[in-house]
Length: 184
Image (cartoon, rainbow, N blue to C red; front, side, top):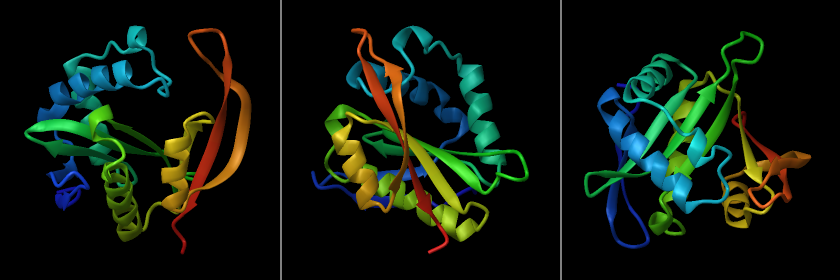
């Protein structure tokens, strides 16, 4: 087992389970992905680009589960996926101590502690494993709630890419790079 399930109660008093994704979760992850894209303006992938098959999703889950420096967590409530977090560890030997974090949470489940629970679960897993030394993430400069969450969890801003993201209306948004050292 990649990680033991974590059961926690959120601020809305709903008890959820956070666990590693299984190949059987592929369909649920794809459905959740569609919903994330419809609910959030802060994702890089567009609806038109989200065209993964169940087989591709199963292969992604298998690959992450087989890697000692990667993790795919799902948060479950009422037998459906309400959020997920991916740590995508680097494969090359000189940088395999780094992972890129991506997180998505259904809109109705935001601001009630789910992001904190997912990040805490992932960072505890990474510290226990000892392979990863730094977790990185990218965030839209306009996503103030996400930036506040990441800072609360110990991430610090390490760089900014100006005009990195082109919004559908033609405006450009900066990308902020944040990192969390696991050495502490």
